[in-house]
Length: 215
Ligand code: E4P
Image (cartoon, rainbow, N blue to C red):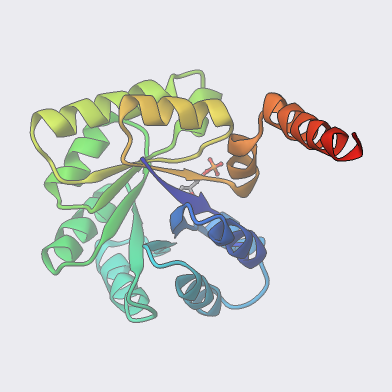
């Protein structure tokens, strides 16, 4: 499973990139609204920090508007994926753009049917929102598992991005059920590495080694 960072914060992206495990970034309008600067400038900056795809979302409501916006967004940098919502207009736009080779991240996906349609429309990625499903009393990771199984069964090439990740357990289960990618907030990324026994072990090794120097 690959890991993308789910943020539009430049410092977080720089810090995460240093760890060498991030292969892409996902943004959304809410994440972008928390940062300073113009939308395009921010996305261009992020694209320069990571080699892999950076998802930038369209805001139009009709398929025609989404397609127009997407065609502009992809000129901003070579590594952009366009996020398009799982609506009828979004599906139409996804079909048009995918046929032209644009990488679409079909976002705000909350059902297997939406994910199946995304794949049939040629989307490069589909993003089931795990945390938001959990919040609504459903099992978000069960949906990720179902999508992976159905895509495997029919050999559909769309990659599953486990999104709306809230905690490290989500990362574990995303990997277990075969999500191709998990897009995770910076705080969750740092938590993934943490283990109290590692911290205790590091301290003990240092102390034991220092003790040998004294004798
Ligand atoms: C994914 O691409 C979205 O940006 C994100 O995961 C949404 O997460 P949230 O439900 O925490 O807002």
